[in-house]
Image (cartoon, rainbow, N blue to C red; front, top):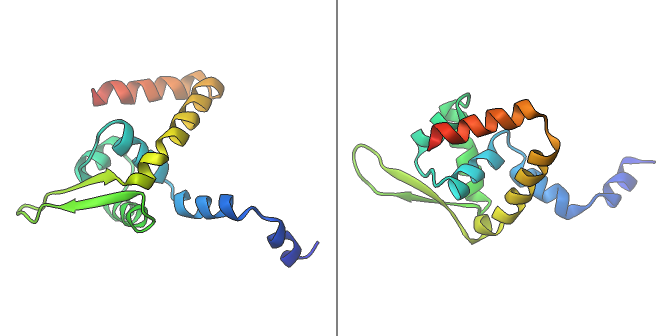
Length: 123
C-alpha cells in the first residue's frame, strides 16, 4: 500500500485530537486544572514534578491556542496568571474521566498506588 492510500484511510478526527493533545504533559495538565482545581503555573509545575518551565510554558500555550485553556493575566507585579478550562476543555473532562477509569481498571497496582500518593499530597 502506498503512503497516499494509507493517509486516505486515517481517521481525521482521531489524528487531529492526537495532534492537539499529543504533548507529553497535556492530558495531565488538563486533569489538574479541570479536576484538581490547580490554576497557577507554579502549582502545576510542583504537581507534575519533572517538567521544565519551558516545557510547561509551551504545553500551556499550545492548549490555549487549541482552545482548551483560558489564560487570565491579572497584570500585577509579581506576575499573577491563572489558567482555567474553556467550554471545549470542560467538554473534554468526561473523556478524562473515562481514561482515569480505564487506567484504574487496567494498570498495575504500583501505578495506581503512585497516583493515590500524588492525590494525597495535593490534599
